[in-house]
Image 1 (cartoon, one colour):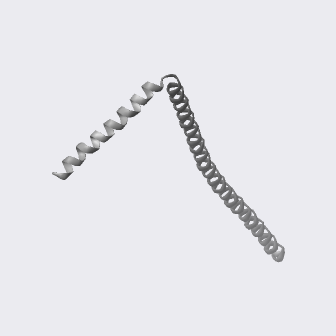
Image 2 (cartoon, one colour):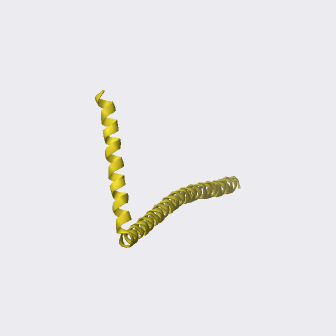
Image 3 (cartoon, helix red, strand yellow):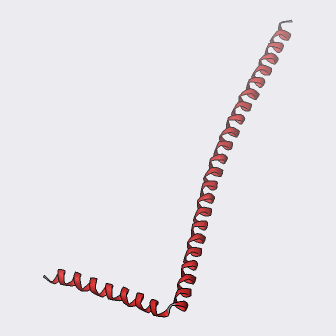
Amino acid sequence: MRKRDIERQLHDTAERAGERARYYADSASGSAQDLFERGRQRIQQRLDKRHTYGRQLTQAAEDFADEANYHYRRLRRQVNRHPGATVAIVAGTIGAFLLLRRAFRSDDDE
């Protein structure tokens, strides 16, 4: 009987150790899965932010191009309709630029 009691005790101890090992392995596996999932979500969030930022930049560039195209077409229409006024505006702009340049040069020379 004594031999059977020892064998039963060893068998029960081995069984409990196996159950404990499975419990710890499942717990470690769950923790690793949680860490993996959190890392995947963080990476996904960063990529989504970058994608959103890229989309915003693309839309801003398209808006800028549309605005530039609108002003170019408007200016061409004005030049075609009022060539004299356009020449006067360009001459006034060049004259103002030359006057400002002369004013700032005379301040530097003194």
